[in-house]
Length: 244
Image 1 (cartoon, rainbow, N blue to C red):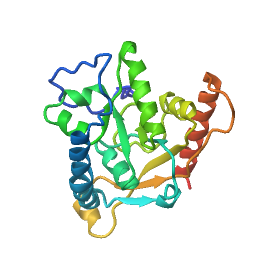
Image 2 (cartoon, rainbow, N blue to C red; image 1 turned 90 degrees about the vertical axis):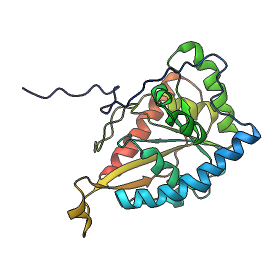
Image 3 (cartoon, helix red, strand yellow; image 1 turned 45 degrees about the vertical axis):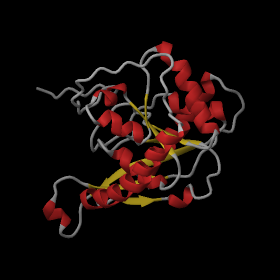
Image 4 (tube, rainbow, N blue to C red; image 1 turned 60 degrees about the vertical axis):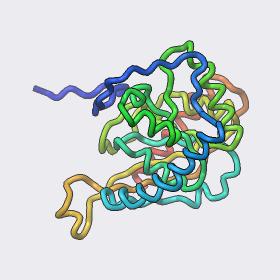
């Protein structure tokens, strides 16, 4: 029997999500209190970044290319990447280094015991599924972008582990970029065969993260056609980088 192709909007891996998580109209997507910010920065820069730098190198022999493309970034921005590993957000964080980046994620990520508290401190932002919650979500993200933060989106929406093509994009990330007149930073996660002793120690491929040049949308006007054009432009650039 022929294997059924997965739904592009559904994760291939389904995580254990036993807890309830409801977003009301006043949910604070980005907490900015002094105490929370202190402990968030301490965990992010003092613990997560050093530990993950070592862990991702050991597990994936992680290589990051193109850091020079964001060295002189002076404004907020939207970053986008393909979604091909459960913890590829850790690689995005390492790619940006000391720059302040928030990671959009499914509501379901906040239904996992312990993880929900940890990822909140590590700047995860749940994307609300209900229309009634989306106005405040947009306002808070707009404010963070205008204050110089980077918001990371997975425009493919779903996680497909080790998939080696760029899938269809949703429009949300490009909407935010045009609304706020900030660039999109395309990031492509690619795979390579392990070399040396690693090829005898693991079956899965190693990982390279490519940071491409930021892209500003040139045309005036915040409208649906412009969002679609921008989305296709970025998609083509990311597809082309796979064959470079």
